[in-house]
Amino acid sequence: MRIRQLRAFMTRDKDRPRVLVAIDTDEGITGWGECYNHGPDRALIPLLDYLAIFLAGQDPRRIEYLILYLLQQSRFPPGALGLAAISAIDHCLWDISAKALGVPVYRLLGGEVRDRVQVYAGVYTAPDPLVARDTFDALASEWGITAFKLSPYRGDIHRRRWGDVVRESASYFAALRETVRADYEIAFDAHAKLFEPVQAMQLGNALAPYDPLFFEEPIRPENFEAWGALKARLDCPLATGECLYSRFEFLRLLQVRGADIIQPDICVVGGLLEMRKIAAIAEAHYVTVAPHNPMGPLATAVNVHFSAAQPNFKILEYRLPHGANYDDKNPDQLGAPYVRDPYLPKDGHLELRPDRAGWGVEIDEEVLKRDGYIHWQRKVPTKPDGSSGYV
Image (cartoon, rainbow, N blue to C red; front, side, top):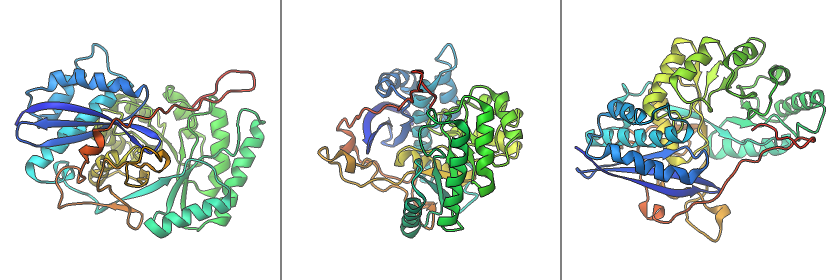
């Protein structure tokens, strides 16, 4: 079997751009993968076209060899865009390899260690407790989801005294616990908005009495020693990793005991191959893995197979697909119709599909023929003195 061509597509998932990749073989098997859209998103297409030069004529089942070969095409280790492109290529290679054997990808990873994969719903905002209760209950009623992730911030943290922000966040979590079902798990994502580790410690410990599932990424990712010092002073589980790119960075984080839970992104780190290596290092440090996955339904499918086969997996971030009809006139209703049969929760879990080869989903190429690019950019906060905050 040989690689015949690589095809890259710009599409959308409601209000977010998505970049999908297909690799076709001379035996008629096509593998699919998804890039993380860091921005600039359109820069990924020519990068993928460049990498395709090195793949033509290669055996797609030599995954370790090909990924190492692509990594070595850069004089220096590739960064966000390079690894996002290689991640999608890695996904395609695994998909092809499993389809060639007629088995799910997780069977190539040693088989499943669990029968289903628990998910949590990313809410991301900080709704009033009664609104949060209704949101949680609706997700629990329809999909059985009982774990959720919110923001700990109730307002602009740069225009208020920090002590008031901390107290308000703690009062908010206390009110949530009194309002929602007792069995709901609630995590908080601080989105690396804090520059000072002492503020992260104060906020995390204010939330700790109310039993958060985890406290995610309160500070920037670059200084690993700062993460080790922060975790040592926290009374709740600390999670991070979505901004780290390789097993070497995760090794440094774990060597300083900088996290209780790591959150690598399978569309960021270079794909499933690297994700498994990262998770193995975490397992040796008694640390669990809760993959970062704010992506589309194809990325979710890839994560399902990783999670099914990984012993120290904890829980998977999950976004429900929004609708199934491509409608340019109603972009707010547009979901991710390029995946015809996405993984949907049952009792708060994504069930495995042992009767389906590869990732277990079908891609609608007619949708991908339309360039569904939509511009999206991060909202960078501005402080009262005119300087920018962190995101």
